[in-house]
Length: 186
Image 1 (spheres, rainbow, N blue to C red):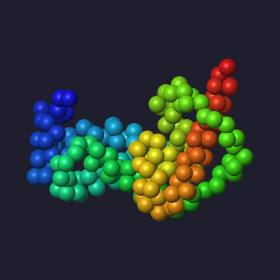
Image 2: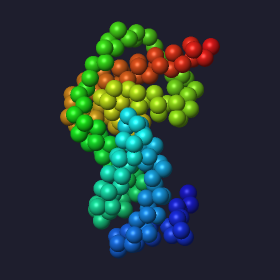
Image 3: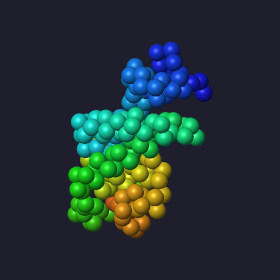
Image 4: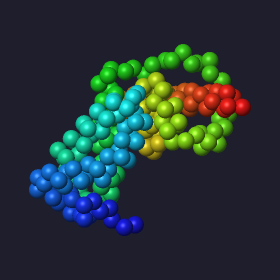
């Protein structure tokens, strides 16, 4: 894979210039990853403005802690972890609780594994954004970011069983919404 280049500089050169306080390099670094990280933020946020706030706060942390990057693993992965943790903290500041949305009556039918693949990325992000906060957090962390239930329980300060339950309920809600979309379309 060829290195990312912005304004004639590689990621490594931009990182070095950022550490020296080069404002243009900071801007280049932001634009190098802002699009991908905005997609991450949109999955955790209820609306676009909230995602923008998460992105901005996350990049402030990236620049503040840039000297701590160990150059082990990908820089993009390091940035992504900061953005995800920022999104989690942002959502927790809103004092959400792992709400019960009253969807305990949702059927426990088997999920159609192909249903979510039929949606566009934008449609899927909208469906995920409409989930209750707790469900959305666990779904994103588990299904998209790849965290284990143990890691989620530590990040969110919840029991592993709660993580599993939130994920199951999130999947059920998404499945019902997808089924409703295709019922209307047919």
